Each structure stands twice: as C-alpha cells, then as structure tokens.
Amino acid sequence: MTVLIAGGGIAGLTLGLTLHQIGVPFRIFETRREIRPLGVGINLQPNAVRELFDLDLEAQLDDIGVQTRQYGFYSKLGKTIWEEPRGRWAGHAWPQYSLHRGKLQMVLHADLVGRAGLAAVRTGATAAGFETGPDNAVLILQDGERVTGDLIVAADGIHSALRAQMYPDEGAPVWDGRILWRATSRAPAFFGGGAMAVIGHDSQRVVAYPISEPDAHGDAIINWIAEKRFSPDSGRMGLDWNRTADPGDILPLFEDWRFDWIDVPALIEGAGTIYEYPMVDRDPLPRWTDGRVTLMGDAAHPTYPVGSNGASQAIVDARVIGAKLLEHGMTPAGLEAYEAEMRPLATAVARANRAGEGPDGVLQRVEDLCGGDFRDIEDVIPRAELAAHAEKYKTIAGFSIEELNAKPGLIPKEARFDRGAS
Image (cartoon, rainbow, N blue to C red):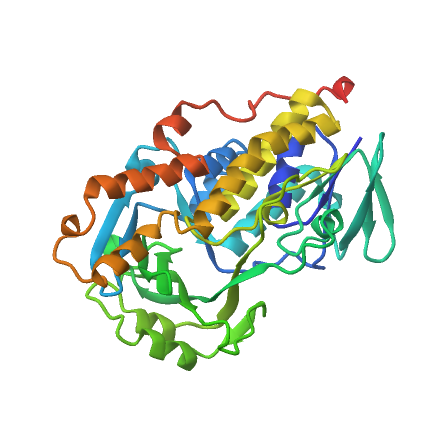
C-alpha cells in the first residue's frame, strides 16, 4: 500500500510529509540527482503557513523567512495606490512569509528524510508515464523501470510528463508576451522591512520584497522581479527557461524608476545572476484525475505569478489529498474528492489572474485612468472599491481572514490512516 509521488519540489515534499504524518506509505521520485536550493523568492499565504505549522515546521519557517507585514501597489511614478497589512498584522491567526524557494525546499527535504528516512526520496528518477487499473497504478520512469503502487500523484511541475499523457494534444505552456527577470540584491529595506511592493502596470512592472531581515545598516536581501510585455513580432523567444540576462538589457527599461523609497535601477545593478523567464500558464483542465492517478501543484494548475499564491496552492493541495485519503481510503474516490474540492478553486484563481482580476489589476486601472499620476488615489478610484477588490481575491484564493481563522484545520494532528479503509 503505497502512494507514488512524481516530483520532489515543494508540492511533492509537502505531500510526503503529510502522508508520513497520517501513516500512509509513500515514495518520491525526483528528476534531479541532488536536492539543491534552486530558485528565488516566493511568498506563502497564511492558509499554506497554517498547514506547514501543523506539520511542526514553524521554527524552520521563522529561521528562513521574513514575516510579511505590508502589501502595496504603486504607480509607475512611485505613487501609492493601495497598501494593506498582511498576515498577523492584518488579523490572520498565522503569518505570511517571504522566503527563498530553494531554502524552503531544503527545509522540507531535510525534515522529510529525518522523519521517513533517506529511502523516502529517490533522486535521479524521472517520471515518464503511468498506467492505471482497478487495483493499482504503475509509474513508468524514463529509463523504462516500472514501479507499482496504489495511487500516483503527479507533482512534476508545469512540464509534467504525466499531465502530457493525460492531455497529449495540449502542447507547450501558453506565453502571454511578457518576460520576467528575477534576481536578488542587497539593498535598503523599504518601509521598515517586511513590505511587498508591486509597481507599474500590465505592460511593465516590478515586484520587490525582502527575504531577509534588515541588518545593522538597514539593508536586506531584496527579491525582485522586473517584467515587460513585448509584441508578438518582437523576435523574442517566449519559451526559453532559466536563461541568464545582462543587466544592461534591462536597465534602460527602468532607468527612471528611482523613488524616494526604492531605487529600481540600483536593484538591477546590484544583482548577482539575473534569470529570465517567460510569463506562462496553461489552460484550466476539465479533469485532474485518471483512475488511480491525479495531478497537483503546477502539474495541475500552473498560473501567472500574480497574488503570490502558486506555492501556497501546492501546499494546500498536498494537505487536501491527505485529508481525502483519511476519509476515503487509498482509493480513486479519495483522489476524486481532492479534485472536487481543489480544482474549482484553482480554476477560479487562474482565470482571475489571466483576466487582470488578481490583486494587481488595480495597477492597470490607474494607468488607464490617469497614467499613474495623481495627488490622491480617492480622486481616481475610491478606497472602498480598492478594499473590496483586495478582499475578493483573498476569498477566491482561500485566505480571507475571517473565513480562514474560523475554519478547522485540514488534518487533525492525531489523525491516522485506517489501513482497513483502502
């Protein structure tokens, strides 16, 4: 009786920790031969942080993350459109964290092998396909090896081989014409630290937030993402991945973005390696589950990096899978119940992000209405309307304050899997 997990990223590792917590045997198959701290900054929303706390990871998150205090939107001229408190400062019972994706992955991996043993994660093993039947499922690895288990969960990312088997005609991820440049720089922590800033509009913007606390000089490691939309005939390759970029190619686009609270050109000039990514997602799927196989995380619902919600959704996926296996046993019904709960939510988030209805949709509205230049935002958009827009996205994404605080945890700490239920 085993769950086979394809992928050892944040989604797969969180699922492994969840299954170990409830007493379900599992094995993780990860393509990379070594788990290393790859990536740049991410955010974890309170609904996901709650689940990691329930896995006894609170101390580790405090060690590697910064508790986010404020989230703000600013025009291309640096003028304040909307600011709101976040996490515990907003009234959530759990914090929001800004942290390095790779550090989180290393924490999850270290805790998992510490609890379940080194054999729980097999590296250098790439999932290539699957077979599903009435009594078991077979994970097919790239080298031809076949591994049999009760269920398979695909946590193998936006280029998921298992998703491609379910939907062979889907093709490549969908590029919307925008390019992201991502890096970290040591720079002054704006607004006292713990603040996230989104500046600009749909065609050009910057997201910045610290992933370390300020030092004695007030400097912190600032994670930043610069973004620019290009026309389809620009000649840019939209689907290159992890390409390094020359700061000199980016600086002219943001040379005037120097404000009294943040200096965007200085961030770009102060970066180490800058990585270039396409802004891509995939169309929402009509189904995630095929018999004894299901999708999770970016394999199921890759979306634009809007609203700082991607990693959080993957973590919640893992916990819901665990909860549904407790309820339904090691059966396809458990996977169907997980999909029934999570797919509508993920679809709503993806569609909101595509349609500009994410929290940063206010940026383009302000750009359209006044070119980003105003004395008082109330003269452009009433603050009550901005507040309602922010709350609507929290509700869609599952971290509305009152709703989340009142909601019971997904998995009680004492819950254990009933082997007779499978």
